[in-house]
Image (cartoon, rainbow, N blue to C red; front, side, top):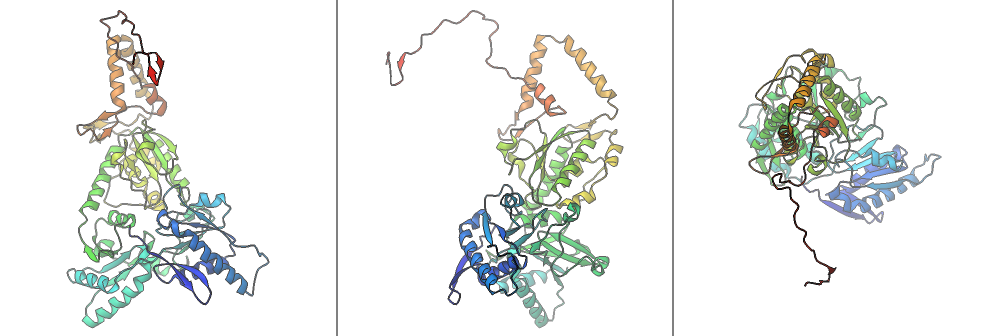
Length: 533
């Protein structure tokens, strides 16, 4: 992620400090303060990512001065003359791109002002105002690279970008229009719009799962929705005319190789994508690593199909609809005949998840920009809700589409009845190399297998029992040839059953020699100097 340059400006006329991202600092502070005063907020939580935390005191000082000045000059002052108070939030429990509503509610905040990179996920309780920042970029060089590459393709261009470059998009559009007229070329390009800079939660949690409309639009504007298809991703929104597909466009991304760009590559994996790196002033056209990630995600889906115990990781408490997604995952897992456990632990890492060895796979419920975890170092795979739908819904096939947002995942998922409908048919497991049955609906087969296992256990001798203990130890952890990859093999259907099958043997006892060993006299005296030393 590119470092956003911060600067502090002193206005000689007002004799006050103003805060800004690279430039136009006064506009940023003024816009934020005017928003606070217009909404009559008096308790504001100001959220910063770790890299911008060092400038938090300057920002709050500038906001206090500006809000105080606006309240004094406001002729229509309300009866509430309480002072506007600001509270700085840092070290968020989950991703810094999401609004930390839990932390803000602890101080009875009425609104959250979010600085830095954001996913613009809808909030559940509190309204949020976003300041994206302004990263530096050479407009002329960016336009030149765009035109040079567009001349090699006959596809129309869709310009997407990181939110830190939203301030320069009008300049790029203007220069593209001028150069196109001079060259008399028929360049067709479209530009995505920023979804919004202010989010107000809906009273209906299900409605708030949908992204808010951009500024100036309303639900009554149905003319565009009936003749075009709308896309929302990474805080951007754009429409395509009726009959056009996103695969028909060349996607031109302006920004760094961030998590937002990774979502674009995965979601629109069938499109031609080009990225302009503003820091290096270069064009990147090779995305082999990103395409390889898509193959690994498909591998994790196939691995999750063999899982019996699933851990649902709560990766957010602020994104609207996260509870509905958790309940949806529970119902999906239960319909597939598997066991699920809900785990809340903040940001997951290998050490935390290693405390739950009974879980064969984890589902990470979080915003779109933090959902993709590289779980190579984890003992068990970590998948997204969309991948869980593919793994635990019988008869579902991956068509290449990849969904990230909660509402899109729930709309695309099958009902529980459809999951039960094909459950009696065995499926083919690539990892076990044959057809397997996940569970038996009527339970008769399980009862017969349990009785057979009990009879077989009664006939086993002590040697065979020790062999079972050794097999249980191997089930806990098994190292591969590279001594790095750690895999688990367990057939337990629940947590208690898994721990019942666990066994531990201490020191090896040599059964051939039962005579006791002779006693050995140890050292005596003080640790600073023993007697025999």
